[in-house]
Amino acid sequence: MEEYLMTINGQSVKGVHNFDVINPATEKIIATVPECSDEQLDTAVNAANHSLTAWAQDVTKRRQALNNCAEVLLANIDSLAKLITEEQGKPLRDSNREIRRSAELIMDFAKLEFPVEILQDDKTRRVELHRKPLGVVAAITPWNVPIILATLKFAPALLAGNTVLLKPSPFTPITTLKIGELFQEVFPPGVFNVISGGDRVGANLTLHPGIRKISFTGSVQAGKQVAVAGARDLKRVTLELGGNDPAIVLGDVDPTWIAEKIFEEAFWLCGQVCMTIKRVYAHESVYKSVVSELASLANRTKLGNGMNPETDMGPLNNKPQFDRVIELVEDAKRSGAKMVTGGNPLSGRGYFFPPTIVTDISGGVRLVDEEQFGPALPIIPFKDVDQAIEMANATNYGLGGSVWTKDIELGKQLAVRLDCGTGWVNQHGSVGMYAPFGGVKWSGFGYEFGDWGLDEYFQYQIINSAK
Ligand code: NAD
Image (cartoon, rainbow, N blue to C red; front, side, top):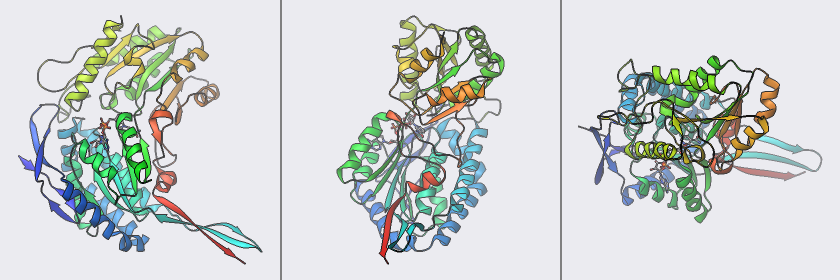
């Protein structure tokens, strides 16, 4: 079995203790990885602090290093994609896309400029805004899209002149550890460190006094703990947390077209994405056709090992998540909900749960109120659109939401009424460097992508000269 190592101060480092990583499609152990000790964490934080001054000197070198990272990812795309599929479960083509997209994002970040801004320049004073790095950044990632989510943190953090300690989820650490090793040739020692371990290591990292910024993507529950940990010595914190995104389908849509789009956006990666559609509110005039179109798409979906090119949908990533989806679906059944498709896990090895279309359900049932993060989608009818908006907003989450209609202007007006960071019209989940992405309410605070994502890794310094 392959052993994966941490990258601390430019060196590959073994664990004093190790833990196993499981392939969710086979439930077989595929790797053993280090559980970072407190001493190793100290060493990594110290190395990252030590390398700060030199790293912050030269932005041209930083851009070059980032472009080299992108090249390294692309040169290793096949082997890295295979690792993602083995530890995460998603189809290999999605893993390939994940590595390619990460390389593109790194190159896009490397191009961003942050010149000194002149805020005022008149007879009395000249005021300049300088952007300076914060220090050592702790980047903590979940198990669903491990490499893109890491990239959205380390690329802007490093471009801004910070140094980084990256900790992936204990369910998907191996691709990130491998990338740490590959990047040893790109960065000076201490600039980019990758440590692995469970939630305790994450918590210790957030509490470490040598860290100045925490960028966290994960659950609301852990996010709240991260906010508290950061508050202890006033670290900056960015929280990209869970979502319970609604999609509101108006009566003027073509149900077949809409169902295809909604199916893609709800069941992508087995529903394990923060910004997938988690609830559908469909106007009563199209409700039945939307349900039957979604059901027919669900019945055609091929579940299987992500290494098989025929596979449309892989397994859930881990046992706790598998158990949670089963629990929410069983709770919905007890409440009287109808499983139009699916509804039970597949027997045999692997955490497979088929796409499940759920009707006869409403708010007040956990599958509607909580983030299921899995392939079970409740479809709820509505009569008037105000009622739909009210139901859509009746949640502590506020990541995204969408409105589906032929009338784009009306769609925009309704999207503005959704309490969420991004309101989409006739699409869901599209993000990119062109817009900030982040949540409101319990979905977190702070932004990723583009200049807004980069700005999370600076502190401003104002230089105010009298004339
Ligand atoms: P999780 O919160 O359990 O874990 C995420 C990471 O945080 C892991 O590396 C974990 O080890 C670490 N961690 C756990 N407790 C911690 C603590 N107290 N202090 C510091 N680190 C800690 O989340 P998960 O189950 O891995 O991921 C699923 C969640 O992530 C879902 O809620 C999903 O919506 C969310 N998510 C959000 C976004 C977004 O951009 N908003 C993107 C992807 C996933």
